[in-house]
Image 1 (spheres, rainbow, N blue to C red):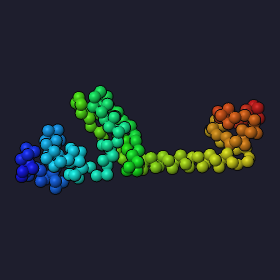
Image 2: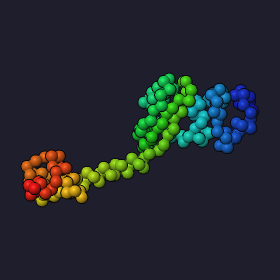
Image 3: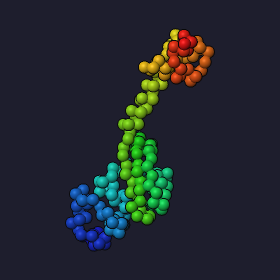
Image 4: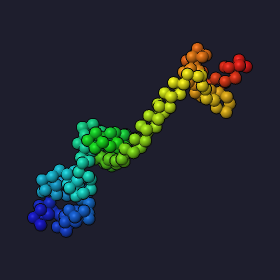
Length: 178
C-alpha cells in the first residue's frame, strides 16, 4: 500500500500489474512514478511485469537501436529495418514511428526463421551453381523461345565467350548460325 501511495496509484491496479493481469500504466507519469518507487527503470518495470521477456533487454540497450529510436522521436520520420541481435541470436524486423514529438513506438517482428530459410536457399543455389559449373560437358538451359537463360562454364569455354554474353542469345543462332 505504501508503494502505491508513493506512486499515486490504486493498490488493486498495482497488484494486478504484478500478477500479470494488467499492463503497466501506459502514461509516462504513473509509469515513471511506479518504476521509481520500485527502484527500476520504466523498461525494467514492463519486463518485471512479464510483458517483455527479460533476455530481450538488448532491444532497448543496443546503441545503434537507441540512435534510431532517438532519431525517429526527434524527427518524426518513421523507419523500418531488419537487424540481428547477437545477444539473442535472433533476427528482427523493426518498425519505429513517432506518435508525438519526443516519443517513439517500436514494433518488433521476429524474422529468424525467414532469415534461416533465405540462407538455406542461398546455400542451395550456390551448391547448384557449383555443381552445374563443375560438369565438363557444355550445358545450356533455354526458355520456351529457345533463348539461353543459363550456361555452364564448359559451354562458355566451348564458345570462347563469357557466360554473361551468352545469356539471352538464341541457341539456334549460336549453335547453327541461323
